[in-house]
Length: 270
Image (cartoon, rainbow, N blue to C red; front, side):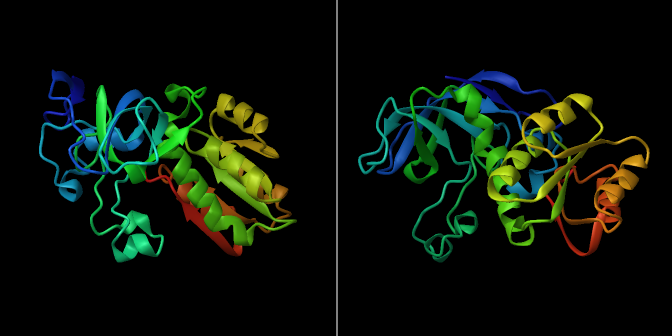
């Protein structure tokens, strides 16, 4: 099969011909990739920022935002069958360790992360397991949903942490309305009654933010956006800041827009 593989850090991926993965274990699932999202983490991987943590051996195949169709399953798989449309959770977990049993799957003692510490989805096929695939309506197209496997999960996880402090009458500032932020805005609108203030330097991103439920949009120009947010929050600052940028002064700006005793959630990491 074809796979876009990283052979050396700081170099472009190369298209290789590699062996197709097989469902050899009882709970293995092989997915025919319909779409794989490009995350900024993939760029960090290419730059070598994850080399020490992941301990991955080059060459390997990145790609952790994946969706497609079930191609093959192990003998014990019952939740999906060949041909099903699926989105792939980025982390493979066992379901049996203490972390999994208490619902903290992301700390699975036996977990692995396709695209980070093993071959991922920048290929024709991906090997994962039954716990990591979510069956979808066949009318959904992988290209429309693949990025939700990570960007969607990350945004909704951040918003769920903020729900307890975002009751009626509160204000929340969203820094960045890009790939993660525009999902976060929709989650805030769905889960909370808070007034949403979106801050971004890009006019197109702000237009999208208004379409998706942002109550106020503020363009980043010098330091004027901080003053505008202070005015929108009656001079006290917002109850919560959800920062989807995390670099180039965003954190300092966020703190300046946060009220005393407020809550700051940093999701972007540069």
